[in-house]
Image (tube, rainbow, N blue to C red; front, top):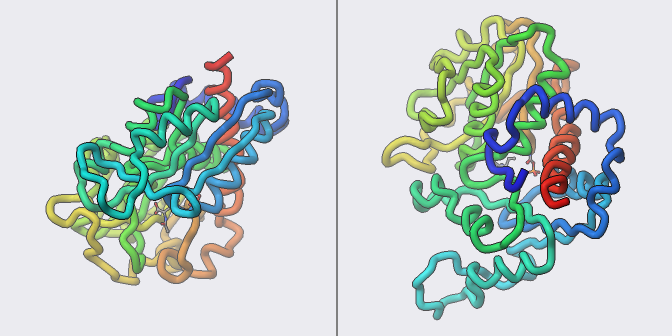
Length: 318
Ligand code: AN0
Ligand code: CP
């Protein structure tokens, strides 16, 4: 594997899950692969899980790791070509990227949607420049439109807990005080469609995701109806995508907060969220603390998904 940006890059999902579960039984099995190889993780945005789990995965594989937080101690980067750089940004990304590439073998990038231009966000202009100009394999640590390391961890978690071949999985929007990107729900939808589960998306009207991510999922605007008989509930907030509302908050209705009321109509469903989560906005204390909550094992599987992805990238470099 060269780059890891979307579900397409991972190939057969059954094989990927099998590999993940094998790595989980011995996470140091491939510790020879990363000898004298350096991973550089570049963060344009904050992170707890991605930062720690990806670094741990690199250590599992015997790699060295360099972490750069662009907003803490690095020069502010201009990202647009053609601008006269007389403002507050002393360096252009077009120099910074190849320089970063010269110090490492693999690059991970976290760069969220900016919500300034839907076109730029959905064309993944930042991630794309890393792919074009770093000369290194690049993987997404959540980019503008997708979070594939999260989705692979989600898939592993569902496969570990499902009791039916084709479980009912429901992605539900939930309220949040700040506008959040669509990367997690887009990506989750893309992976759930690829996994061929019984997949339903529920959200208030106006929160439609881009059709290329919705795919064949059923969309149900009545949250209670969507939850009926579900095996897995995956909660996430996102800001509006469609039309002139891109990046806007259209609804703050706390009746969408996942609570016992909705969970009681499921088939004793597991609760999932990628974290970080705002309690009593997205989900009540009781549900996130319940024995059916998978948020901690789900986060733990981030180490496994990152180990699978880095292993495959390293195999491509041998
Ligand atoms: C981010 C998001 O919603 O995309 C990261 C989630 C993994 N969340 C926040 O910014 C709170
Ligand atoms: N789920 C996830 O990616 O968390 P962080 O933003 O803390 O990395």
